[in-house]
Image 1 (cartoon, rainbow, N blue to C red):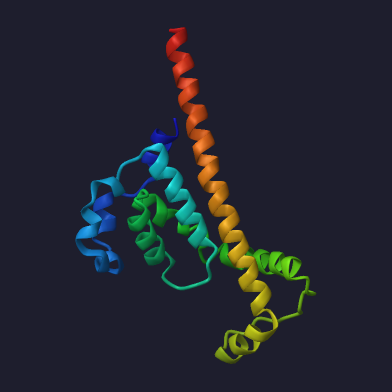
Image 2: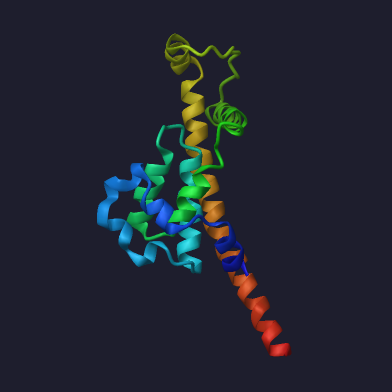
Length: 169
């Protein structure tokens, strides 16, 4: 059942409550609904976490946490899923966002050589920026929806399978 698998990998809620960046939410973190694992809260958490994983902003975890609190999704899972884009995976994922963005916008891929400077960032905003932002937005929505409906289907299938096992016993 997905609930058991998720419980094994999910971080402890006390650790999350004590995170210094999440202290801005104060007493809102004490809502017990943010910590329960059920089909609706997990599906919403996948939607929130995957959505913010593709948004190229700092503090994705804080944005995911705020949205999780608003939509009453599972908070630890929403935060954990944002880490799909980590320093190792971020270049490949964001390049894929750029490629998808060029396809959506209908522009050609611009050659670029990464330089760790502010001037490169400013120059790139005008050349690769629009396609990159469109790609990130499109993939955020797409993977958020896939996560939401995928978990709904997986959870229902798992529960139906468990019911069939019980009936056969």
